[in-house]
Length: 173
Image (cartoon, rainbow, N blue to C red; front, side, top):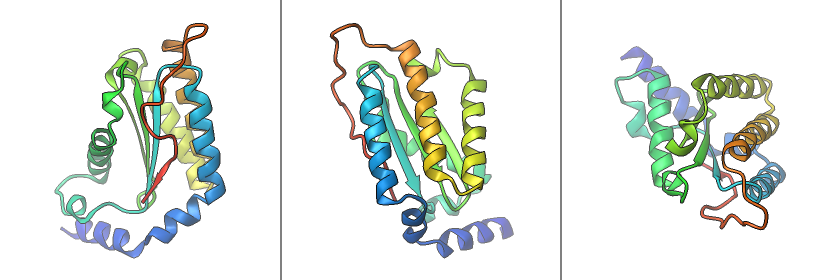
């Protein structure tokens, strides 16, 4: 109970200003452009979601912060329609600022082709950047790595185009 109360207080303490501080309008614009450019080279779809704190319903759950963060990322993966791409190769990069937690959720088309260690290494590199306060750099690096994986496993054929199934701009909450 004490851990849950501490978690709740931490999340209530941070406001949406923390997200705006971590992700400047210029950073959001650059990331949106990087997503759009990436998606012109492969058939995947990439979403970035940066959230200051969890909704209260998540904070009361009797689970570890790691489990709750994963549940939230999976919920957003569904709500944002990342799971519903034509080739089942959408990827969500989720950042929870209150916990400095990161989740990368890949749809079954891509996750079946990529070893879990690859995702874990990506999250570890992002975590290092975020601990140093380099949110744009960490997300840019993760985006480049996801793009590389999608290009390797789902490249576009010569002359083929990728219809933009999902918005490119990161979501900030």
